[in-house]
Length: 356
Image (cartoon, rainbow, N blue to C red; front, side):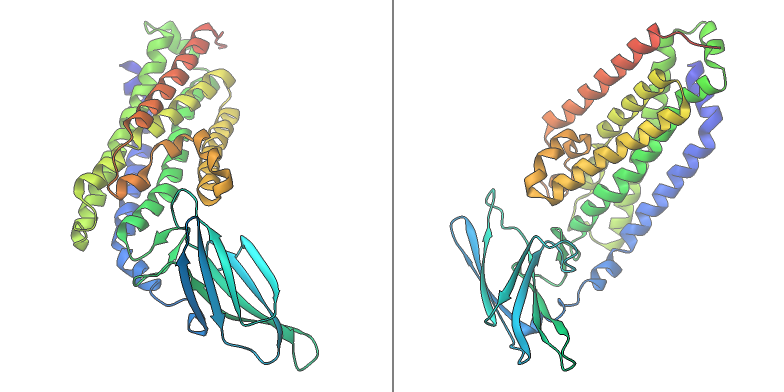
């Protein structure tokens, strides 16, 4: 109990400020949804210059594109990508001599992948230099009032919230929770308080468990407040017909086991390294690696297996937002992983010499 009181006394202002900031950010993001949807209502650039027809085959889509012809063009280039901007095209077909092309898009796991097709005219300008001009961009997925990219329909609140939860929400909270977790232990080493604390009638196990309980409880309170703010914001927009109150609140709370794993992992780093700078560095690196594995696995089908190494992927917020059943097995696995990491941290802490 002493460790809990000391932790709250020393850090309650920081905890409260972060809670208020996150509540304001989440509430503001939801309130901005109508503007976000309107910003993406414009058609794809030059889509009126391309006609597209799609035929579903057994294991692929046959996509035929036909575009306006440019008299000066020697040939055409077709770029295929997951986003209209074509920052990193998945496929590029060059030297197309006709103003049409049929592209076969593979279908995996019976899911039709969303792809964008950019057509470029390539030829020679009046000055004799090479000339490249974009004719337009089209997609194989019919859009209903809003642009889609990376599988996100910006006219659908569920898709937008899913993106926000998966990127900003998890990463920001995870970094903060990792920082306060590792700092709560390693700071006692740096300030030379650890040997004094442990000479008092409190065991090492109790000391670490009380620290873990404090930060875990704060995280749960933080998620509860964010869940309530989200529900209130969605209600004020009149969007509860799109996504239910229970879905919003439960999805938020079910991220708690992910943060328990992060807390336990950073506690382990703190007791093993005994140095706040090294431990904080490890904590940030751990969070960024977990987020990176999840992101890369989500964007690239060939590397989807990487998601299994990220604790974030076991909180499947996408499925929850769209009304699919909760995978309690994966949620339970996160609790088990957190418990194992905490037990290892306790074992190391009890055997480690504490320097004054």
